Amino acid sequence: MFKSVIKTITTVAVLSGLSLACYADSYASASFGFVDIEETVALEPLGTPPLIFDSSLTSLYGRIGKQYTENFSAEVRLGLGLGDDVVEFEGVDTGAKLEIREFYGAYLRGGMRMAETVYPYVIVGYTQATLEWIDDGVSVHDGFGGVSYGAGLDIEVKRDLFTSIEYMHYFDTVGIELTGFSVGLTKSF
Image (cartoon, rainbow, N blue to C red; front, top):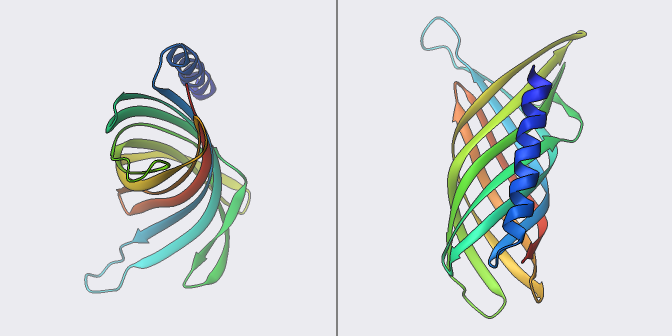
C-alpha cells in the first residue's frame, strides 16, 4: 500500500510538472541536499537533561513550480534520501543507522530580483518525510511532517538556467528536527 501511495504521488508530480512546462513562467529543478536530523528524547524524572541524537544525511529532490508574478511563486517537491548514516549521541556512534526514505511538500516563495542575475527569496510551506531507524537488524519507519521555512538564492548561469542555493528548516515535530542545505540547477520555461 505504501509503495502505491508513493508511486501515485510521483506520477502526479511528474504529470503536473510536464503540464506546467507548457506554460510560460514555469520552472523545474533538481537539487542535491545535505540534511541534518536531530532527535531530542526527554527523560524522567523531570529536571534530567534530555538525550540528543543527531545524524547527517544526503538527499536528492526535484521541484516544479509556477512563477505567478515577478515576486511570487508556488512549487511542489519530491525527494528521497541517498543512503543512511550512523546515529550519534554526543559525538559517539550508537550503532544505529538513520535514513530518509522519501519526502515531499508544497511551498510558496517570495523574492525580489536584486540584480540582473541574482534572485534572493524566502520560502514557506509544509513538508512530510518518512524516516527509517535501523538498529540490530530491526527496521522501524515512521512519517513526520510540519511547517517549513527557509531562504535561498537563484543565480542566473545563462538565459533560463539558474543555480540554486537554499537553506530549509523542514520541520520540528515531536522532538524530531529536520534542517538542510541544498544546491541545484533550475530551468525556467
